[in-house]
Amino acid sequence: MKRNIFTLMVLLWMGIIFWFSAQPADQSERMSLSVGHVAGLLFVDGYEDWPKERQEAFEEEIDHGVRKAAHFTEYAILGLLLTAMYRAYGHEGERLFLLAAGTGSLYAATDEFHQLFVQGRSCQITDWMIDTCGVAAGGAVMYLICRFAKQRRRRGQQSVKNT
Image 1 (cartoon, rainbow, N blue to C red):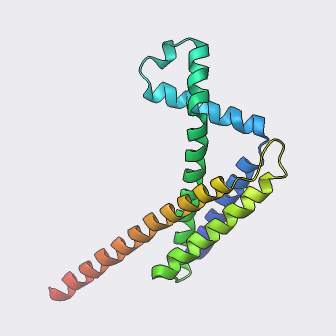
Image 2 (tube, rainbow, N blue to C red):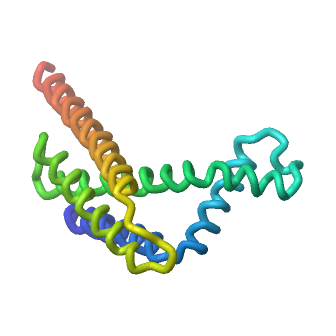
């Protein structure tokens, strides 16, 4: 059952990534600028009182960073999910991490290729590298969580045996 759930979650998340990548450049830019606007509201004192032109300049100034952070984050989530899925299939240790990172990196490469066919978008090797780093980071976090949980279970079993 876990296998099916994690596999479905991976496929759904890949679909979400595909949907984001299928957005034409103008739509994608509007989306990331709106994230920049929310960031301004949340993190910049007095942002809501700024003139509209100053807000737009701020949003455009941070747009590149917002886009790169989005790439990293969406693929970090994929890395978490892939690691959980492969673990549910019985993989452990380095093999678990390598399978998740490899699968995620391959998906990132196909995603960048896909963008060649989307209006105003392009295939960027730097985006693939950021995506791959995100997958590796997410996979590493999930790997460490699984390892920590396994150690806790062992300690719990040992304390039960000692009583």
